[in-house]
Image 1 (cartoon, rainbow, N blue to C red):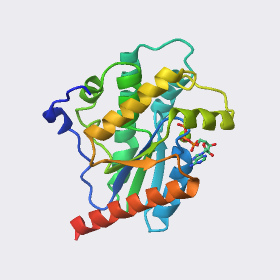
Image 2: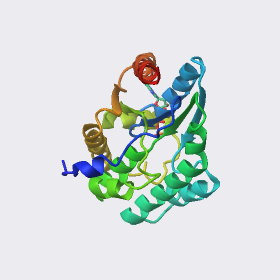
Image 3: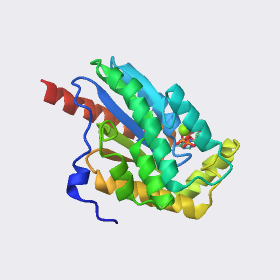
Image 4: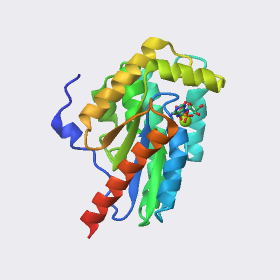
Length: 231
Ligand SMILES: Nc1ncnc2c1ncn2[C@@H]1O[C@H](COP(=O)(O)OP(=O)(O)OP(=O)(O)O)[C@@H](O)[C@H]1O
Ligand SMILES: [Mg+2]
């Protein structure tokens, strides 16, 4: 694993609004992020929170244009250019939506992919290095990380099988080979090792209901711990 200086790691922190939560869901294609996000939203709404689910890249009109330019690209994009595009979309979404929403107590913003996807995709798979990706994010507002990240971990084989079942046209990233996916998995592993308090690893090989239960337990624990702090 690459050496990351402690002061760089320390520049990352969750937003400091009391009574609201910032969450992200991570994992390779087919991990079950979108499926489980729906359940998590319902679970949190039943607890009285107002829940907003956003996706990256995109979520703002500027970001959606960037999303299109990345995911529909037929030519290879330079890895640093790719990382900057994701950062641009992310900074815009943070300023325009996420921070404004989190300023309302009782709100939860959930992102379908965030910083750890950039570590895995651009840092590892595109070989920019985790340190470069973190350096790109060290200034406000990009240094804001979720209170909790749900990393749904599956194997390469499971990802392939689920993508086959889904039978949708492949986008820019999905048309990559096995080596790419192996690198992605190792990128997520590195992120989880660098941010062990923030990232909860969920076994995504299990059934829908078992994955759902693991995630609900983690969310419950987060809410309880924050309620203790806010007392
Ligand atoms: N625990 C599970 N067991 C079996 N199949 C699952 C499980 N979770 C999700 N699936 C199936 O795998 C496929 C991919 O799930 P989903 O779209 O939620 O993944 P994703 O992580 O959002 O993927 P992507 O990154 O491509 O958006 C879907 O067809 C879904 O029904
Ligand atoms: Mg999805």
